[in-house]
Length: 521
Ligand SMILES: [Zn+2]
Image 1: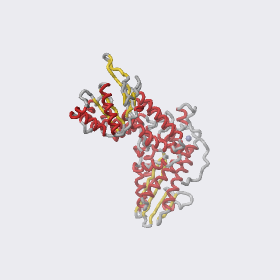
Image 2: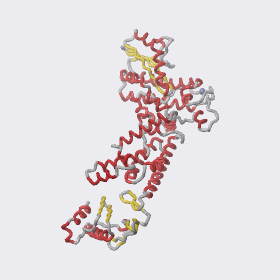
Image 3: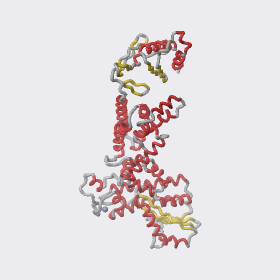
Image 4: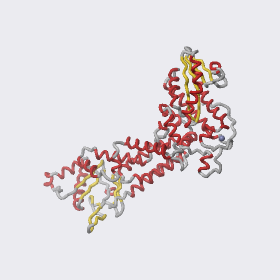
């Protein structure tokens, strides 16, 4: 700052008489940032002249110039071409080290070389990313925390480089995104054939909310271009205008970093919807059927799972679990059929379809039901009937023809009829409609004996996603007096039980089922 003022002063007319003859020093650029300075000048002799003044000023203000840390970089015209040369500039009789031909120097984190290749900067970025990612890889951390380190630490370490270096998006995709993706796949155990689009989505769309470095790069460039565009300095605005071309057009089209993110997310969604039918089916189903107000709770529940089950959810979503259908597609297994029923063993077949696994699916259903029963048991002044051993049977009220899963009646004769269905994501709404039709008559009949009868059509997916219709369930929790925190706890637990039991069912595929004890968590 002092020096900028000093330079402005000695350039002024009135100081010429003291010998600061600078009228020939054109163009003269002096960049000072904290204790770093860069001087750009047309003639070597003028530069020496200015450096002498600089030394005097430093001496006067008791600042020491470390000549060994300085460097000079020269370009001059040789015939009609520009060429790099080695300037001879001195500070107090010491020769300032010169940047050799073809090499680069670094100023404020940016590398400059004669051909403006940024090669040095690119090498530095590649080794930086390699160093950071391999260090995270070695840490004994849960994959979600490794990913958190990438998002919070690695990306912020990169952001200055991605702002100042002249590199292209393609270069970032090839040289930074691809090693990062390799580690992310390793941590989440996603095979090379599996898409990462699901995890790039936001949490309320069942993603992990991470972005590739190339998206961070576009954000950095957007910030930089916006700073030029909106600067109060006219020359900087001119600079923006004169460079509003070529690759800059793609950065100038964004007004904010949020817009960059929005575009990225919608690209991933379109990819899942239109191009990846098989891997995108989970996303397609939950976008259509899920009760979106509970999606954030799902994400919290997922984040609390141990590593193996956490990774199971990721591979479930992009359909890359080792079912026999996938194994045969990958050329690992010769047969794609279920060993019990000889139908193709798809994910749906293992977790919700096989007719030989009905006992397992009932077990999962009952695990969730038991948790619900326990939750309602703690409520005062309510009568509880549950279709589980150890509880009074709902058939006491409904008769034997219909047996819903759970009945809760309050002291003032309000009755809740709860029917729980656990099925595959694609069947969430089918199950709602099927159960609605099934219990229509019963609800009508019961209505005569109670003040009110509410049918709670609780359709949950095998990965713990709630159907839209479950808003009645949330309403019921409210009416039964559960506070917000207790409601969230209850839903989080139900999601967790669904995921854990589905994981167990998946692990037991093609094996005999011996488990009958209901899960207690
Ligand atoms: Zn089967």
